[in-house]
Length: 197
Ligand SMILES: [Cu+2]
Image (cartoon, protein in one colour):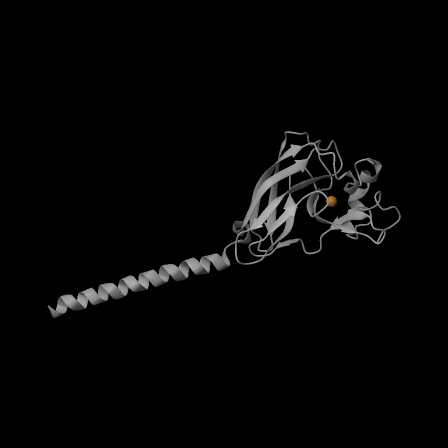
């Protein structure tokens, strides 16, 4: 009789330990999970463009309880991709420039990438992007985790003022060198003549 009781107690203790271990494991995984798994990317699209620059948009939702930061994006559609923000310069014009430190999304918040705001900038299209195309992207976070998404291309006539290359293809040809300076000078060149800094 005594022996049986002791066995039951031992079993109960074991069950409790297992339950604790399961709880602890889940908590640890949540806190340390890759940033890419914390973000849901939806409503993506990319602007159809014959050459030069284009941009990709969408909503990035951070479903975790930690901030996440996107450091870079790549796509086969463009050799160089930058993370851009749109800001008002001293002349009151909206110009875009590379965003320092990438895109950070606070816990439980969403970042809307849209014309006239933050966006993924395709600096140099390898070939035309035509409406209906599907363009693949890979997003990289500060912890080196990555997430893929595919954005359908569509014609979009708005926000042209934000695209310095659209009406002036010659400014594209030497764009790469200027871009690498990282001061946004050539970015705002045709939108904001002679306003390098
Ligand atoms: Cu841009």
